[in-house]
Image 1: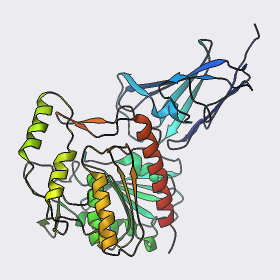
Image 2 (image 1 turned 45 degrees about the horizontal axis):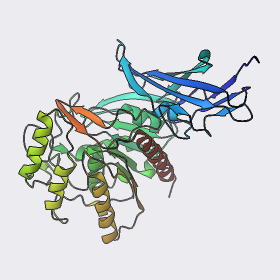
Image 3 (image 1 turned 60 degrees about the vertical axis):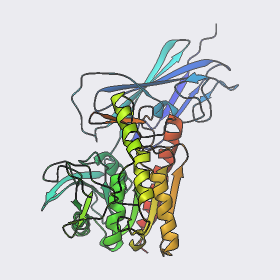
Image 4 (image 1 turned 135 degrees about the vertical axis):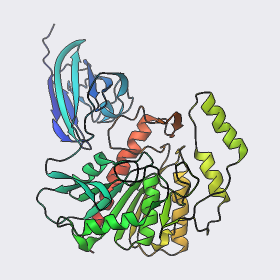
Length: 428
């Protein structure tokens, strides 16, 4: 039997999490079989694992970028399939780490069931060239990420969703592409309101002005606000009122202000110390009973229909509709047409219709991904466990039940967002 010593090349060994990895195996015989496994332990101690089995081509090579595995946790030609297709298989006791801690992924290579090589990849959520600074100043709570060269860069604000607190990981990743980014908390931490209820939209204006005053920000370019889910709703609403905001990225947002999430029934936001008008139409009894039955039976709840019921009962010219035509810059909208948390796709279509009707003078674009749900995270993060999420005692269905579609959608959306941000970083 001929002695086979596979040559295994994996690059890069260390990179930002959104960078592709190239895997090439050579010095095999034609039709030789090799198995590759991937393993990762996240910051919470969850164990993730994937595998793929490949057959060498006539040149005795396996090029993961160009080949479809004959078996594995994914079944497509995909250079990053071993990463997004990881399955959660267990948990280890581990002290919770920072969301910015690097993720280590071990790739193991097997020839004829024998382990022949392992490679450890280091995947970073923040570039070594980016500094991190905690901000708590005059009621402002956030984390500032900025290039260590301290050159003036385009300033951005990142707003998370109804989970509250700070969303540092995505803000740090965006900053790592050459921007100054403030991850801004607006409820659920420190000195901020405990509930998503009557949050003053002027708080975003204050954060913009503070950011514009920083030496690491080019104030000539204004501020881009990026928001996801309820943060997308807030981003669009704030940009409609404050000229400091020069462009908006709204990911799975709403086109209308909905009730807040708190002990009293009121708006999510306030303006000039008054609750902002919100969609207050009663939810049909049959929908409430459907959600109640699903909860009692331990089934995931889809809130899409309840939000649609309120949306359909609101006049499109009502005060609760966000006046997006007043935004002083370009707009990028991102949604999934299988969003089961709320109808972000419908909302984005409504925003586009309104902008056309009002003859909006700036650029606006809507990316609506077929089969994608409410989850839009980082490229190549495992998408096999994102359809359902716990919110207190409730399990919510976010939609997007195909991990491959979810991964492709969020990767494309991320790259499109970076293109949009790059255009906005240039002087007009």
